[in-house]
Length: 151
Image (tube, rainbow, N blue to C red; front, side, top):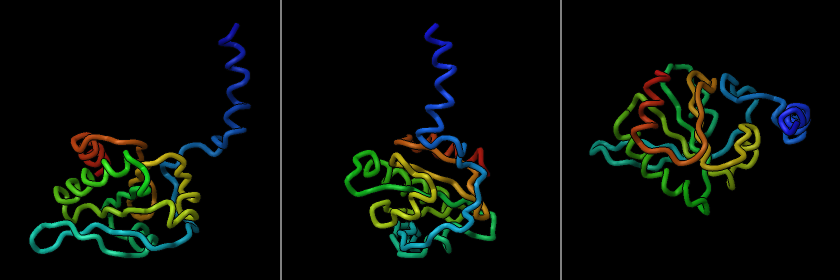
């Protein structure tokens, strides 16, 4: 009996909490708002540099490079743990991967457009279309394996 009730109520509950639009993977950026983000780059010595850039320019690329967007906030403990992991991933992947750090407190319109409701929220794009995502802290090896599966 409880299972039947759940089956009847689940569609209603999902529509109330906003899940009716489905997953975000496969969704192009479309008319996403723009804002200032940090882009991880490597200097000539292979050290990570944080460079300011524009969100749409960094993510809505025409080449086939993977773009990893890390939706994070300074006050988020798991976000602070994921940051160094993503720096190591960037070092490992080099120019094959663009890493964009989107501070959700500084860019709430972009975070809302992406439907980033829990952080850390990581989205992977190719040619301006989202091809993957994960939420929460993930070990480096799993992130790299996931990226390889998306190449």
